Length: 589
Image 1 (cartoon, rainbow, N blue to C red):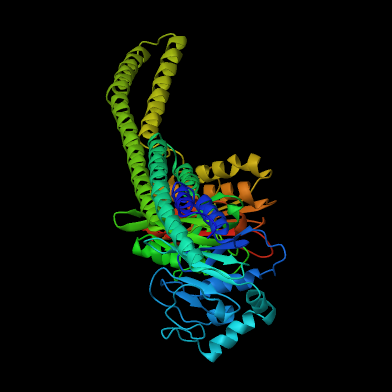
Image 2: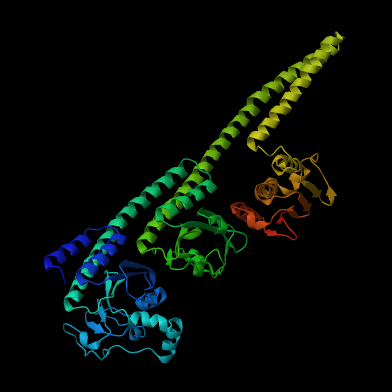
């Protein structure tokens, strides 16, 4: 070593004062270069599976052979660094060693066997007895991946390698390259510095975990507050996706929800270019669905394995966190937090905090929904009270007034009164009858705002109301028991199918028309309602771009639930040559 021991200790203490991971590794590399005299230090950052995710290089490599990054990555992943002995191995041998099992090892390699300094447990020409070569098959496979030129770059650059190991796992590997030989003092100095770095990394982890918890708690409060202030369901889910992506420091966030049949579909996204995932289906055998079915969060290292997809949408993503939205022991949806490939992995702390936020969000959603239902119930109660008052007081008084006028008219008619008087009485009686009819209509409207509007008229209004957004008028076909009808049809259709089914029909048409207006870029639309004995079929069809452009599909999930409630079924799919078709069928008695 070229520095006094006190200076080395001061350097180690300086490393332990850092609280950022990159700064700790930077200090370790620079200090190791200073105390050993090695011109270059490589730091390979490891993930939880022992794979190198990033290689940091420090120092001056002038006059030294360049080391191939692929070879370096494979070497740092393959060599086992787990005990305290100093080894003398050629780099090519080290690539084919089986992993060992004991902690904290420094490995020294040099071109010349006779340059060893300091004690060693094995002769310079021997590989330790507890190290075995891999099979010829594995060796050949590895040789195919790393060519002779890559091996020679190692052979021309002696190195000293050490592990940075916390209580949980190996965080990184330090590799010093370019010095002709490394002394026993060099090895001891590097060991001290790596141990100091491990302590600093543990402290940094605790520090950032505390900051992360504070962020998650703040996020949970903001989500809960927004939901209780009256956000609708779609805005609430988008808020959850945006907030959890930001707090978890993810690149994208996806929310997948149950859809038509057994399909779960991505309906809400957050992050750059995340809209590409809207409409992505997750099959029952995907890791995402398994997590949802188990109602348990999971941490995975690869987004592709979570989706069972092999396309451009998933190639650039790596670590993923599954957070089920659990209510009463059952998943109502799944939040997926995803980071770019080679980014920092999610850990169990991330999972725990994300699950807590998701649980709070689900409870807030349920509470907000309950409050809306309560408000609606109070409104209905007020409507019912007003309708009773109108019936019991206003109508009764009008009836009494009408009876008096009618009696007066009868008495006057026997005495041959002035025709103008009789005309005035007739108009008054007619006005009373009209008023009674209007009040009755108001009463019915207060009890059920849609009860007095026949289904044929409601459907016609839905189609007409969307014309401005579509830019054209959709074609409408209404059939009842084999006969075509229009908006002039009375309530006989409603009497047959009932008010609930009437509401469902309107909801299907509204969803189909709204989606077409927003996403389809269609030039023509067809709406058909066919009612036969015991059966209703609603079809909404356009000639637009198809299903893949629909941004949100929670409305389609709602239509599927309505169909199941009436023992029917619902399908939504793209059609040839272009367009989308919704088919909704239900049964009634």
